[in-house]
Length: 192
Image (cartoon, rainbow, N blue to C red):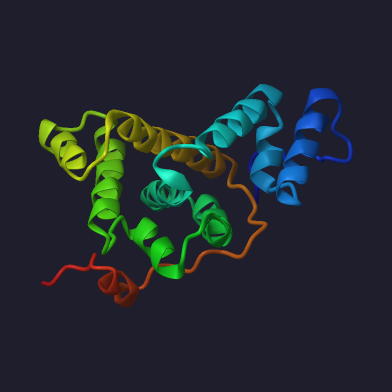
């Protein structure tokens, strides 16, 4: 059962109502996570601005979403993993791209390095090693793109933590658990 209030768009007033209307216009629906954020119009407005700005990130929408998927898996956020998986095709992600994001492993070397770097940022709370930083630079990422990868992790953490605290009710199909066979196909299984 959801643990934080979801603001009802029908009874919302003032800035909250405006923001929820903006969400509805942009997505054709108001996801439950936006209704939870609407408890604080400042939070919802900040999230919408941040998300819109990241839409023009030089790493591209595809990698941006893959990094957030990786972060959501690591943070065990069922809501975020499910919604990101559901909207991924509209961001240009194939089923293989979604799996790569969820497993932090891609057959594309540049994407793989970025996902591993994002994972290192999350696990080390940003205290990555010189080797990890050199690795992402060697894969062709400049400082702007490195900042965008870190930002993708942070934005993912925000939604993950909020939805985990709220236990936000799913309003999209639940993402299927990653099977060992699927993980092995993406190159993330280990041999024992």
